[in-house]
Image (tube, rainbow, N blue to C red; front, side, top):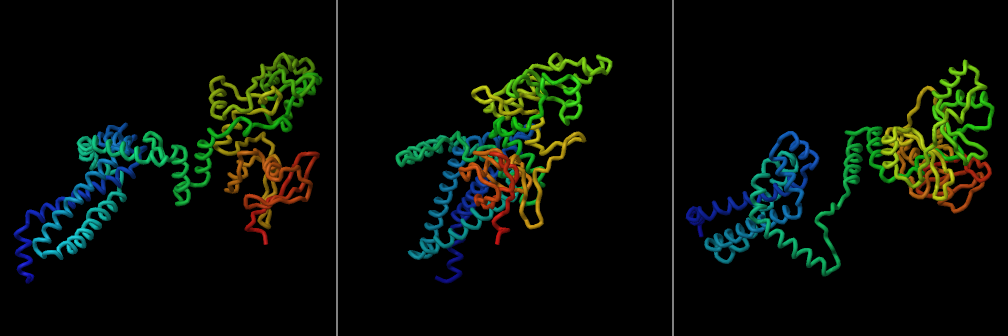
Length: 432
């Protein structure tokens, strides 16, 4: 068959060719729509819908039933692909005979890959939100028509997978919302769009739900307290010398907290007594102490602080024994980092050495160390660095004893009785 005869045959079947081109365009529409609607930002769509963008509302409703949406688009896409391939095969068989099958396979593969897959998907992924809003009304119509068939297909698929012990819950997100946000923030940080401080603050908010009061409290051994049996002038001087505005008041035993003393109340009492500190009654001016369990979640404790308009609470264990105290500032510092003012005492809890090692106090929280050095030491089983070493080694180490775990070399520099007070940490990459 000559070239002229081939063109004559093609021209005689212009209607079939036009149908094939139209079907390829429709296939491209389905492919691009699937990509755009899958990649569209739900948060962005919600914002646009709130601002009155009707098409954003359609996108939101479509992606709420993602399984139904994708099922409808796949059914439509496969339908037009199969139909276009069948028409092309029939056309080329009539022109080239049996060899038309091979030609149709090659031609349709090239056309479908380029114009029905790669091109529309590349276009959609370059502007997913805008593309999604453009195609949303038409896709909504397709889902309305094909949706029942898509639901039937999804039901059959779940039934088949259930036979093999695989259960799909359409209402369960594969990635929890917090992890999705955290992943986005980490990605933007690596790309340079989010600085480390902002990433740490956002991470602190996301981590609150995983923390208990015991993870952020000040341990009982580090609490500054007032003895109710001390002479008043001694107690007043202790309050004035303290960097804190609120101090627990105890009697007979430091486990017996009978109240909380506020520095303003002390100054007011001193003024009322004409500056005679001996007349100040610490018990009388103290406020009732608030006790909370050490297992209270940090978000619950934060809400409790705000609800009660309180700033400090004493932390007890399941037996009612005092474990420490927690303040509103302690919780806020988990989000924004250390909050220091002109009265805070600068405690050297972390010092980087010239040789690449880090010297830390044993009481330094693991979370603070991770945040400062961008490390990822686990804090599930221990709160402080000393606690991590004891947990991993299963002993109370002696001075100069070293351990290696989690890619770091820990050396005990100082120990007081059974407490590890100072350690040197060296990343394994710095050793050797």
